Length: 349
Image (cartoon, rainbow, N blue to C red; front, side, top):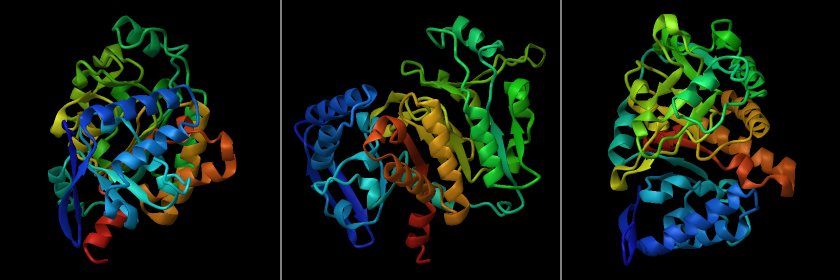
């Protein structure tokens, strides 16, 4: 993004070329208008159409291709491209699978990162049902300045992680709920032994100090853990996961850092060894998250692709809820990393 024009480098198997786009100031206004409408829980159709016209309509590949991998700059990290609205009145996700990568270099490195252990790993480690109201986690995070008020319980989060475990049915699955949801218990659970890690907890983005963005668990004073799993700690974890799901508020949001992308919790998990991350762009509704995640895990084993499963879950919500399926409830979930369908196509499979 730049002034007076921004530019897109469009890359496909047919070649690469540069396409001029509107200037930075115009795009920033469109992003701000869209986010305002979404957070006010409006349909945001006009704003979604304006973003499509500015960012996708000028790019022939974005119109023709079924799979889009987007490497964003600046405030474009804050909007879901699959929720842009085409001239037909359809959301982009109704005709395309959209994923993101922090950079072209990281995308290349992720395509090269393979695990010979993938099928020997345990299917799932899931954390949810943290007792914020009765436990010390919410109060402690308040005292540390992470939130402006005591954290409320997420009533649907326990059901969410149990549904994930049922969908990936295996006796080797590990589900941590209630008093077991301490930061120390999570870290002790041989994290590199799990193919999928799902965290249905509160998340806090710190836009001033991105390394302090955190997932809020329970503290364990005896183990020296405060229950605040910061991004700076996440990057030091040893993961070998094909997928990490961060079903928490604002896990994909952080400080905008120009062409270097965005520093956030989702990026921290990629640096720690995860190949794919599903995260969120804004504070999500607990019940809507449960509904979407149940659909996601229903489709995940079927497609063996997180990007495709997330798209299918969103489309299902749109079909079932109709006009009530405003973007606030579903569009905030985003996929980052290497989409299996894109990777296989690139390799000629």
